[in-house]
Length: 441
Ligand SMILES: Nc1nc2c(ncn2[C@@H]2O[C@H](COP(=O)(O)OP(=O)(O)OP(=O)(O)O)[C@@H](O)[C@H]2O)c(=O)[nH]1
Ligand SMILES: [Mg+2]
Image (cartoon, rainbow, N blue to C red; front, side, top):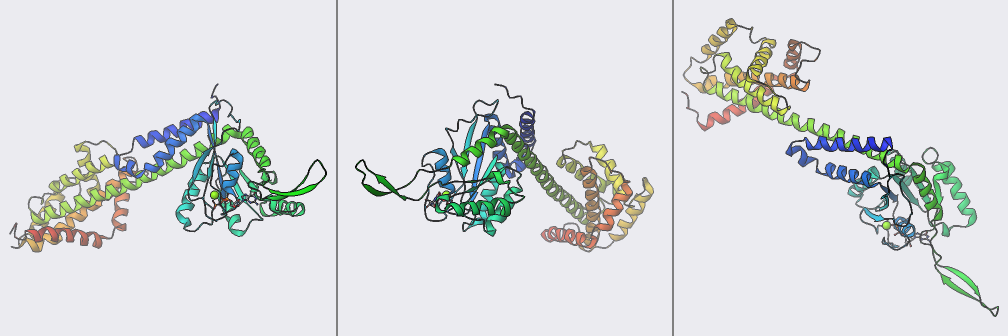
């Protein structure tokens, strides 16, 4: 058998690409993406084996579990008069459908039972239900009367998954012929308009009540006997099989492709989020290192190029966070370019001399403690700005985008709350100085 369907092959490729994307994640990212990975692997398996998943939703006690039993032909799911009986989403193999996806000899159909949607303690179960809906290929919505507002709202929510939905009006044995006709009319033509086409509304009696049968014996005598009629889900079964025949392979392919695209977006956004956090840690780490270094020993860093060395080291670390390769000379050049764009130095020695003398003027006092704070914090602020600019640069694929470095750096300067950065760095500095306040006096 061939698996030549284009959409099918594309879907398989999409799932594999997303799995690859996952493999390229760092261990920390992988840790956060565990459930996505499990879902993707399962989706891969589902596609390869041509597994079709049919999920049953509906309010408590509408007969979801009974429907599954009736379809499978044996009591695989627990059914009870007590509402809220089914507690977890679970899968049943529906053997005996005789159904095979074209081109996939091994295909199987799985029925997924879910807890009732109005079940108490529903938040977590609602999440389970959403996940089941996200993965499924076909949705059965089970009701036992005209839809109430909760059911209607739920159905609208499910319709947003863009999967085929069959609405099952169960417990049809409880209604008279007229009532049935009227219910179907109301459901199909009024309540479900625009959500589910009328031909996808079917009736069923998954677990009909006992009823009185009149039995006539050979001698003409009549007696009555209470018996449970056999379940009747033939209309539902036909609707399901027709749907699968019409678009089974396309359905599972489309689903898997959508699922993979969604997970791929999620992996991408999580990576950005984690990378950003890591990059901020690097920037604050180096900025406070600079603040402390300059604060404790202003002369060593009086040469602005000594300070540039710390910034260059920060830039190298940031490049690694963004998965980019950079050489020391490039990092140093970028640090100088940013400092220049900030207006802190013009390329050359003149400016650095000015800075040196300015710093010296501050350090004439005896106590380093006094001068350390403003100088260190100011130097740290400089590194913070360099780090923010470098982050912008790396986020734009190691370029300044359509802007000049000066425009970008000036914008960062104007958008940064200088005082709060300095306050935070001053705090770092104080902590270090308190450990050994006379270290440099
Ligand atoms: N009369 C009648 N009763 C039914 C039918 N189907 C199910 N029931 C009864 O409805 C009750 C609930 O059935 P379940 O299958 O447990 O319903 P459920 O939707 O799975 O319920 P939860 O798992 O609790 O959400 C049981 O007492 C069933 O016997 C039907 O077709 N006709
Ligand atoms: Mg149940």
